Image (cartoon, rainbow over all chains, first blue to last red; front, side, top):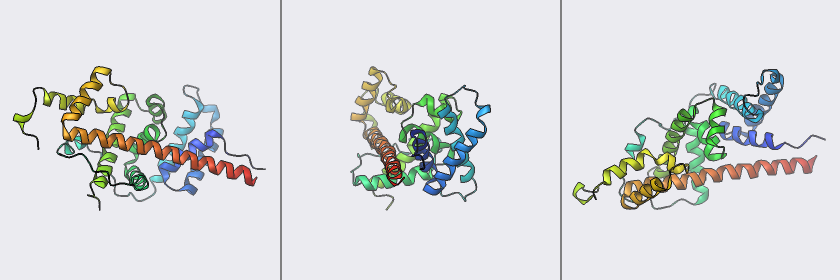
Length: 168
Length: 84
């Protein structure tokens, strides 16, 4: 009998799947991450939780694989993106069904540049604390928050364009 | 577009405050006074109202993605157990 996936496996898989966008690849990445963690357990220095360490290995593996693929058209996370959104004069008319909004969000998250996608996935999709998510990414809190904010604004622009029908 | 003469005193200061502290607001890290100031401004400023409203809607949606994925993966686990 094959053992059922543990909570740790399920959570890792959910995060990596969001990152890769393909279930088969996400399974491979999680397996690879567990294998690397097992092989490198002697190098685990207990400065972080085991789960944090495992997440980091998984994300690095996902990024390594993503680097092999041709880049998709990325969302802009340039500084000043916030100012570009400042001229609207009406609140958006919600035209999105929940399902449609979900698809828009999925697409927008996948289109984020890699260094911005992970903070958003860890913090806003998976609901990890800022401390924990920053630790996984090996970033200081301020740097993590800055990336997260830019990622949120970029995804927000995509949602806004959808809500107003500008992406049609 | 709102004209300068229509703006209440402090409008632009509140506007800049809102933009500067938006991330803290979204993460619940702004103190009560700051929250009130930001919300009050967002009620009077259409662009900030829209920005805050869509960000809050987006964050709700992102949390929903995480929950849906967790449910889906949990289902996989159940199916896995059932088929074992």
